[in-house]
Image (cartoon, rainbow, N blue to C red):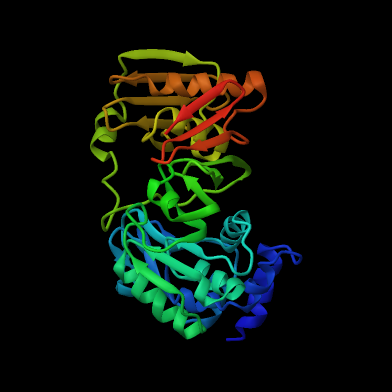
Amino acid sequence: MDWKQHAAELARAAVHPASAWHGPVLSTPRHLCVPRWYAAGPEGWTPADGPADETAWARAAYTDQTLVTRVGPVHADHAADGKAVTGRPTSSSTLPSLVVSMLAHGRLREGQALLDVATGSGYSAALACARLGDDYVTTVDVDPYLTEAAADRLDRIGHHPEILTQDAAAELPGAYDRIVSMVSVPRVPASWLRVLRPGGRLVTTLAGTGLILTADTDEDGGAAGRIEWDRGAFMATRTSDDYPPQLDALFGEVRERDGDDVTVSSFPVLDVMQAWEVWSMLSLTAPGIEHRNGTDDNGDRMTWMLHSDGSWARAHTQPGSRTTTVHQGGPRRLYTMLEAIRWRWIEHGELPVYGARVTVTPDGATTLARGGWTVTL
């Protein structure tokens, strides 16, 4: 495979030529980090084998796209050829443009020690090694197979960073100038603050949102920064082989149930997770909502909101209509929360999540504030 030509095409698509990360993208054979991955299909996730079809391998690895490498507890390396796997993605090789964006937010300079959180395929660590040198890069992942496989693949590329297998939110060894996370966290882990040197910087996304948080440490052991204006989302941290089960039982119960509270909304059904401002603010207001969308036999656009506390909402908009019939039940009115956010969005022309000021206390309490709005995680 003429991977250098493909890497040049990826660099043109994923990073500005004036960026300090342009060279690392050019010089990194991403395909070696992802020899197998999953392709989505109607029956689930089917593994694809790169060496078996180098043309497809090059097309997948050197397109600016995310490649899912693990579904539930099954890594693509261990999946049977031609057999679909069902479940939620639990690891991936993230699209290179977002990896580069996260690293760029780190404002890394030569001679600085980096902690790369969530080793995954090893691609972000490879880029960091190409830029900083192996001795300045430490990468950590909770999954022992991922760190083992990444070590082997990084060795094939010619890089040998320090690789740790552990929960990145637990106590960490070493000291770092920068922490850049390729996994989302519910709030900034206090352990990160304890290993960041004075003047250190951290970059992460917040779980359940499209928000990129950057913060610099302060003399009190905390940190201060902001939510960046660009957006990014990663899989959330996990401490076991898989994420907790989705709310399939609750969905089955309420899929067609009439609610205790039935109203008509002035807005059509919204695919919340495609409206990043709305999704992010709703997740900060009421973490843990599961969203599902579909179309019924009459062509009505449908959406469901589910929560583990038993709260739920079902809404549908008929073809040609701009209003929505809403059914809600359980202890909280999830759709009412969504409606309040949508009204604020319309009335102000924006929501306060992007550009919010961030303060982090030494114990990790993470506060966002902008325009009179504030939330502490």
